[in-house]
Length: 124
Image (cartoon, rainbow, N blue to C red; front, side):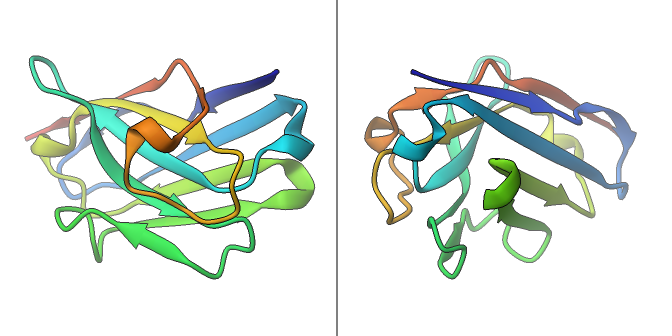
């Protein structure tokens, strides 16, 4: 089994920045590509960003492109999401996910492990 624990969420004003972290533990040798998803109140969970095992390939949702950056440190089994120029509409619970494949994916049904999430609230 793999456990994913997110951290770094909080309350920030519009235009501010946050850096989320997702630390993996357990059988981390079985996971490769990772991603971030978010779910706002009353809405379905949506894709935010994904990164391949090597880190060379990344994908972003259109609404975060240019503002968010996903990265990873395989030596620490950790993936990050740097969020800049935050907007009130970015308010959501952010979850990281891991899949047992090297290629990244935008589809949540292609991920095998999920964290509990961390709340991000952006005030106007």
